[in-house]
Length: 297
Image (spheres, rainbow, N blue to C red):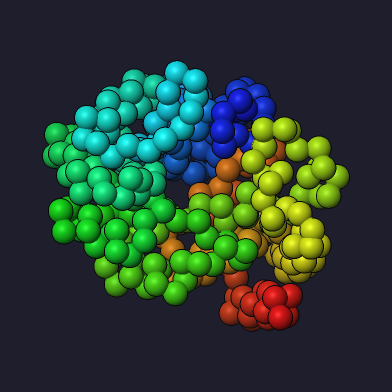
């Protein structure tokens, strides 16, 4: 929803479509929105504010700091206390709210400044500018360093059938430590949604970062599209989409609290909203695991 023209864009996006997608999700009972200052270099937060204007009750709003940009749009990282405070104030203005429900450090960069950054996050919480503080893309060692200063409410890592690196250490640590886990890219940036095709990939916008991702290119692409057909087969048994099955796979892990799903339109919202209640059976989970193992052997 940040639109095109920045370093990690997904191509152009119609703001009105974004607003309609948010409205549809809220009408279906979704009660939280996750965004970040860097998405569209501030634009995504502004779109969220427009979408919530005039609604009788607003959802919980999560956003992130640490990714900063210069006048030419070049993105870098800062965990300096002064930067985080400036970013928080800017996000509050763009979102048109008085307090951020969950404020997260987007990336642990630069690593040397984690302690300074997390100390400032705790100050913002104590001052009432943010209700809870969390981290994103942190490893276990980095979380331990932060926890020595103040508790971590949540961790936001990537997790999907195609990206499972957090299973060995990070998810068990979060579960032992009582840290909520909000995974992102459960459909692997749309690849597991059921609507991704070779034709669609071939016409990705020039600034769509997925053009350069190995999972969207051969030979991995053919393997991944075969996996989508299994997700479709399982979903058909329950009138669910492949994307909803992919999301349910992430929610099957006992350490996972919730999944972040990105949508471009109200129609896309309709295609994933069932994941809020759908859960995989153990047999269906094992079907997917077996297929993945066979593809990787």
